[in-house]
Image (tube, rainbow, N blue to C red):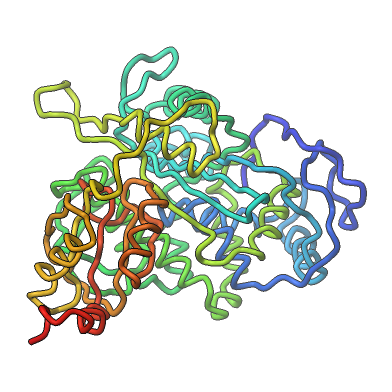
Length: 459
């Protein structure tokens, strides 16, 4: 694992039984507690690299890589002792961590620092908040139009290539109302294939035929639709595919789908025997300024999290028009940004614009019930509840049992009010629904039971 030359800003820990260096640390010691392996790895994966499998698995194994200045065996023994005795650290204040998955630099010598010098294929900002035991993740599209200091107006993924993690951090902070970014993690794309293979593949629903060649990354994409177990090569294809009508934003949505797939995989105890191989694979793929104590604090924090404590949102915006700019951009919606920063990052520096009346929320209906009449019926049902801005999107091909309310543009409160009005369905805190909507309702088979309350929908 590569470390930044920048020193971590931490308060001293008073007692460190493993003899780690006493850096400045805001992760005070807590009484030992027995870790649950599945939940721990699940948390770190979701926390520090969720938008692509490369970043996700990379940072997961950052916690397990040998420590600087130790041999591989020494590092494993130290971390093994920590694992046995329980993690004794805690996060004592909200922390924002920038995670970047870096494009493959084709001519970079393997294992060199140059593998981190490419553009950021993935950018996400995570807020770890011990005050309410939550983790919120903002996916920032790589095509987002920004002004990179010293470079000019360009896509946000250029920041790392032009000035490394410090310029990337400055650019994102300026773009997001001056938000503080405490730490960063960079992961090389080359980690992707190896680690997914070591995990035995991941279960992913491929919504459509995906086929073309990504010449910039020397990657041929060829995937069939439907549920599949993807190996490392095919998982990378799924993450990088962008030849559809949604371009980079469709890729962000697929990356969020990969998060869920990976989290499900990492709960399996079958991963335990693969840890030595994962350790060896990850050392050369990670660059971070997180200290070991801070990593352990994040692991300890993760033991307390439930599924609903982890929320994902996409930076609100729109596609640029074909003749608007020379390049194709994601144009950030400043009002949507302010709302997301307030709700997900507790940012009070800017007052967000007032929300439209709930009845005017733009709600998309995706029929995943298998009943061809369900979409029309549900639109009528929502109209009876007073929701007037409703439209039917293309049917969702992966049939499901339970109806979901997907928080496409970050309006969690609106989703909860809608859920209360409906009296059923679950809130899905991701941006994996219909792109143009505020909320997407993916109708499940449970609608057949719910509609029995309404005589007009009986056969």
